[in-house]
Amino acid sequence: METSSKRRRMGRLVIAVLGVVLMVSAGADIRTMGEAINKAGRQRMLTQRIVKDYCMLGTGVDPERARQQLQASVALFETQLAELAAFAPNDEIRARLEKVKRLWEPFRAAAMGAVDREGAATLLESDDALLAAAHAVVLSLEDASGTQTGRLVNVAGRQRMLSQRMAKFYICKGWGFGGAAQRHGLQQARNEFEGALTVLKEARENTPEIDRKLHQAEKQWNLFRHGLENEKAYIPLLVARSADKLLAIMNDATGLYAHLDGR
Image (cartoon, rainbow, N blue to C red; front, side, top):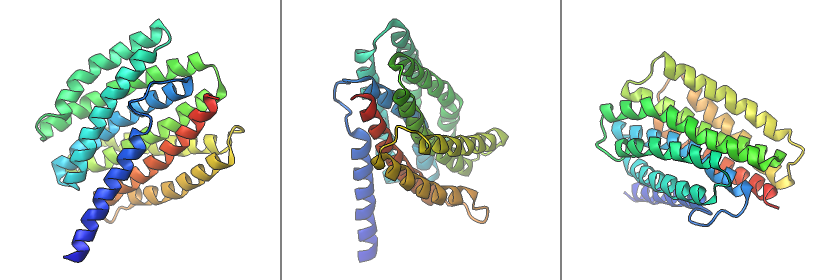
């Protein structure tokens, strides 16, 4: 009983720590282009994390944690959308944010509605469109930045999304969504993550602190990848937690790149 209670406390601590990590700078005005690219990039991640958590709820994988993360992710998406709209430096970015808002409203309704396979199918059918719209905002902000560090903020931030996208594909197959398209999506995300990690490691702009974070990310990626590749057992809880650890590390790295772009 003591061990079980200790595990529950540790689980709640993990939720709280990761929530703090993702809420850092949320609710504050955006002051630099690096911060804007960071927050816009985090929106991409949230589209995938919301679906992942919804499917964790539906399949009974760590449901208390999944529900808290789902609710926090929805709230954070809306907060950041308002912040980005207030910051938007030109008409193109404002128009792209309006598209995100249009796609977000029905997506949010499905995410916060009844948890069933129909809802999961709706989210899985619409999350790529919302992800693409959010990504378009990032690209416009990167163009407006016109700096190499702005590009690095984008690339590092996208790794957060890929961590959650891979976990999403893995966990959703436990609810019967494991067709060829999902398998292809998972493999593509793995390839993109590895390619981008190489790009980041070779960036001349890296500071020693960034290099340390990328080393941590590489170590965590190897653990996460082994979980994804385990053909002997379906281990959604371990995969989800490993993905969240990778997300937290890459969130730190993205913030460091954003600081470079804001100097």
